[in-house]
Each structure stands twice: as structure tokens, then as C-alpha cells.
Image (cartoon, rainbow, N blue to C red; front, side):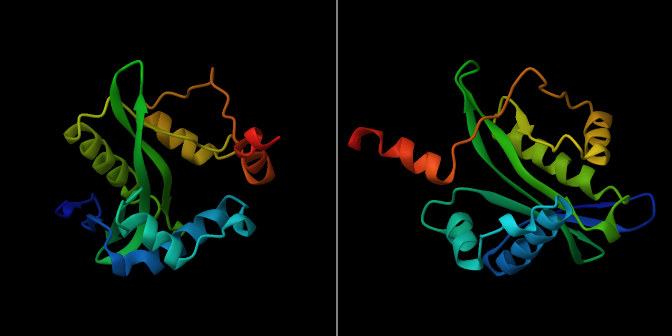
Amino acid sequence: MSPSEIVNHENKKITIRSACKTDVPLILSFIKELAAYEKMASDVVADVDTLEKSLFGNIPYTEVIIADLNDEPVGFALYFHNFSTFLGKRGLYLEDLFVRASARGHGIGKALLQELATIAYKRDCARMEWWVLNWNKPAIDFYQSLDAEPMDEWTVYRLTGDALIDMAKKDEL
């Protein structure tokens, strides 16, 4: 992806670009800042090596775009593809979107989402989805201002840690 640039209403240049291998430490710092904002800092166990393998290994599992404001990195979006059996097409799943507090209010979050929508459209994705924490009213208000629809009728389930291991070893019982 070649970088896309826009100039916002304040004459500030926003550039959205694909991450490269040298961005991995920056991406990890964004992840840690996001986790602190979400009051989940102790949950981050990712490190540079793990991220580098996931983003740039033999089989990349995820992708990242980075937002620069006047050539300074200020935000990122990490995403990957999922699949809808009903629609018979893949979708784009946004795992994380983060803009540093000092850069919020300049259109960076919207520029990141617009770039993701463009990627989804060009890749013939049927939809774009993400989760948001119920308490994160600023994010909810932002997403609703973009006509994103909450999926209130769905409940997310997760297996992790010992529960995941126990399920994986069910045949050993």
C-alpha cells in the first residue's frame, strides 16, 4: 500500500502508511499505550519478536497501518481477515485502533478507519467489524457518528489459558 495523505482542516498533514519491520517497536509501544488507556496494562505479554513473527513472518497473520501527523507517528490500526459463511466472503476485522491522546481531535481515527474501509473494499470484503469496550463512550460516540452499527444481539465468548488447554486436550481424557 502506498501512503495516503490528507491535509485536515487545520492544515496538518495526516499520512496513513503500511507498517514495516522497523516499526515493530513503535507498534508495541502503541499497544502498551492502548492497554494502559483500557486499564489492561498488565495483560500485555506481546514482545517485539512475537509481533515481528505475526506481522512479517513466513505467513503474516495480521497487518498494521500507522498514522503520522506532520511526519510524527501518532496512531495505528491492527487488523486481519475473518470470514462470513453466510455471505461467502471474507471480512476485515479491526483488532485495535489507537490514537495518542495528544493527537486526538485532528481526524486521525477517522483517517485510519477510512483507510481500512478502502482496504476492505479493494479486497472485496463483505464487511468490517470490531469490538469496543462498553464503558468507552468517546469511542462509541465516534463509531456511531460514522454510521457504524452496534451488534447488541451477539455475546462474545472466549476460551483462554487453562480453559483453552483443557478443551484442546479433551481427547486425552
